[in-house]
Image (cartoon, rainbow, N blue to C red; front, side, top):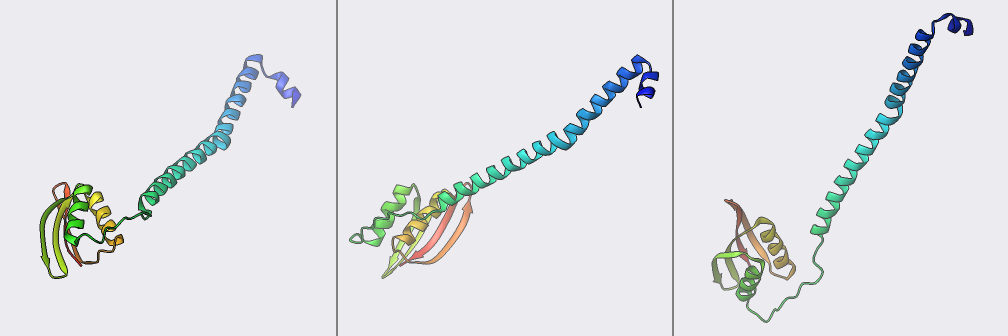
Length: 143
């Protein structure tokens, strides 16, 4: 092998050395750098997904402290809590132990308010949700 190498001109030896270095760089890139970079991107993507799921889970955690003033009438409690949440009461009717209510507001706020009402002991008999422009309208019957 040495004899074959010596018979080749210096110029061709250098070209073969450059070609060998180039092939070594390509092999190193293909077998080491590229898979490592791909794994890193996969791990970053998985981390972002997990962080998003953790944030959703945090928002979905039940509220621990719900203060309920049961001395107030249901209509007053609902009116005050809806106003505090920033919801608009469109209609409110009471029949003996039932209350019919139409609310309008941001979907996330409205759903959180409904959750809070149920957690405070208000029984939800029926619920109809309808999208209105950028808001959500809820028609509900409460006990």
